[in-house]
Length: 208
Image (cartoon, rainbow, N blue to C red; front, side, top):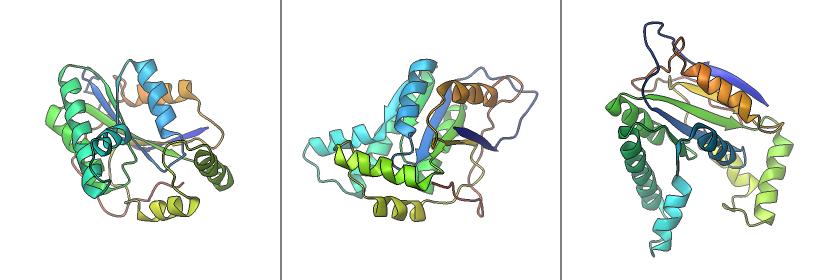
């Protein structure tokens, strides 16, 4: 597994002594949920899963639509806010392929003055990524997106701005120890997470 630091502006005068908000991002079957779960366990962080919240909303009898997705993200932000205020680290498991959902987490971090970063999972091996998608569909594991729909989602993924983020290539599997070390370095006393104030145009889209 390869990991790549994309955006970071160290400030030697700062210290990492506040809660951290980690927001996942990435296409289906790139390993973001598995990584989020393992990191939450290792970091003793609160895991907030947007998909689970949306399924609960739909289970209450509301038809799945854009509004249910928006409501799920808003509910996730409310849960994250409460836990960050209590001094707990929070990991948000979500696709975050739209600029407005990424802005939600950046805004929350700015509001609470906490560190934040995005972990963007990718799978550089297209054949392996397609195999995972087909495996999920065959086993009825969560979303039933087709490979064609995943490609379409990638084309609709918003370009990244200056949000602090790490890209994690899971094509060869997950090395959670390595990711933990990168996260720790990203938020260490010498290299604290930079709190950005908003996106900029022209950054490259994360590759699937």
